[in-house]
Amino acid sequence: MPKAIIMYVKYVDFVSEKLGRLMMYTVFIMIGTLLLNAITRNVINYPLSWCVEMAQFTMTAYYIVGGAYSMQLDDHVRMDLIYDRCSERTKAKIDAFTSFCLVFYLCTLLFGSISSTMYAIEYGQRKFSQWNPSMIPIKVIMVGGIILMLLQAISMFFKDLGTARGNPIAQKLEHPVV
Image 1 (cartoon, helix red, strand yellow):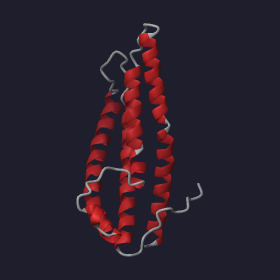
Image 2 (cartoon, rainbow, N blue to C red):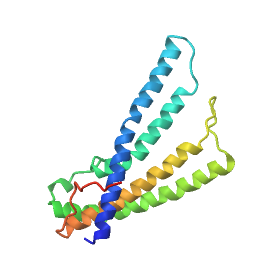
Image 3 (cartoon, rainbow, N blue to C red):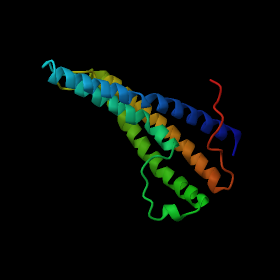
Image 4 (cartoon, rainbow, N blue to C red):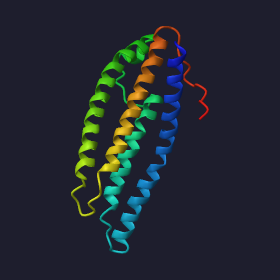
């Protein structure tokens, strides 16, 4: 594989890993928010209207930004009826082929999310609820997470292509100096 592709894979995997590991800790933010909601609602009898929505926004950021890291670790759901019986090279060929469908899907999501984010910014979109939060931050996070997943999908394609050609790009690459 050309050095530019190897560097692309190295940098995208590095960013995906670091952001994915960082996003793992947002689960604790969500748990804390829901715990606060339970305590104020059941113990103090003073329900906070923003807690559940904040937990929803946190969970959305968690799975959108963490999606690229999940792809990198190959921890996503896959139908293993025939795939499991294939050799590593055949699996890589199947994965390289299906990467085109994934990239198309992510490009469609990206187009829609950019459109939705521009709408939210232009009109100051807010969620219609008692808390009435701005939708701009979560939509910007959504665009960033989809871009990261798209970059990771392309990285995965390059790794699968290398494996299919008998010249795999090492899975555990040295992290670039940042």
